[in-house]
Length: 553
Ligand SMILES: O=C([O-])CC(=O)C(=O)O
Ligand SMILES: [Mg+2]
Figure (cartoon, rainbow, N blue to C red):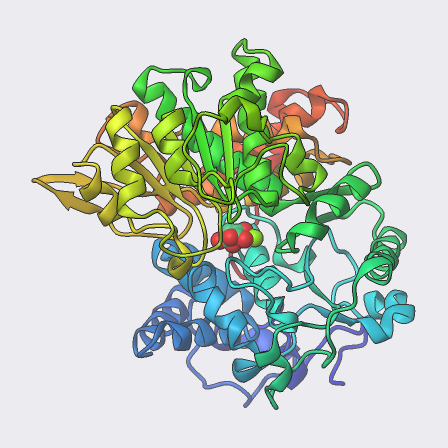
């Protein structure tokens, strides 16, 4: 390796170190000092000039996937330049590094693979996890996002290709949450895949084996978590895109053991709650007066439902009365107590079959979302089914018959999995619907009025959660911290001042939003005693000091 006496990289090795590389921005002096003479073209450039070139190069790509590949390569070459490009054009870049394009990138991860990033931990190497963690490029790691690739967005099992998600999420920790990229670490726990296409793909980069299951699976995850605790006892560990049967039990098992959360359960819940709180305020109708229906009763749906129930209880309802106002529908229909196979977290949200006995239902006794619309008259409909197109015209028209302003959130990702497209929802409800989606959609013009579509995606929450935790030194992630993040987000809704504005601030303001969320999260962490207490001024200063901006040292 080319290095100085102090061990720091020099020469060509420095140019291949994305965290340190400045490319053409190395000054004459630096070029001399670090052995770079002749390795770079002579003209010394500024970060702004480099960013212009990178932006032009990006525009020359024909497809979004090619743009994604270009951005990922830039990230693996020069992180400061990558982040400067992303934050300069955040609205344009986010869909390329995150949903929806990251979905395609995960599906084709093996085909588009270029450089290693983060850590791959395959099941056969489960006894060497300590050693693998020692190989992480950075000694100091403060935030990890881990997936096992089993439920990538609404795209199902992508095996090791799921690695695209931790990389994308952590890019937003930095681009939105200002977390120094050098303390972040994406990890894939490769427990195999049951995706036949991937297993049959000669280019598949993962462990070619069907998924391990049951105790073996939970032991594998435990070996990983314990190794993480040994190596980085104070790290923030975010679980992402685990399948429903694992997500909830893992969260319950580890939430009191280390600083950890599940973004699909808790982050999704917080962003949905924050968006709904804004909608309720605008309508001047508290959440407790709404009837809420869900399509999708997995961990994300249940996470949102529980969060909304907590809010209704805060507003004065009893827990039992709040639960009566929530209707969870999955592919077998409304969850009720005569259904088999409900998981414990679903049982808490089911209705009594006899309470809905008078409702029309199919021959097999199942109660559809349409039946729920006809009988319960929900004013809120949330889609977390992971399947495109399930909010059909008849369902939506039925909903609109019984409520003045239907609030409809097709939250599944990527775009192809959205339960409905905003344009249809606005049309079918004669322009009455208040719509927010999980992936980005353009505004809809209907009868001369523009309806802005908020992107109610957990990206408004998790970067701020990360920043708030790291800046405050929180050691646990509590439900209260997510509630605080939701309320902080709801307060930032531009629609509070102008009813025609979108429910959430534009993505272009994501950095300021993340700071506000971080502040609320940190204050709540202190209140609950999971972070050392300081004055709010001190906290603000810590958040500012912690906030990394792309610039060369
Ligand atoms: O990644 C996103 O866009 C939101 C999310 O967590 C998911 O859909 O799993
Ligand atoms: Mg997710």
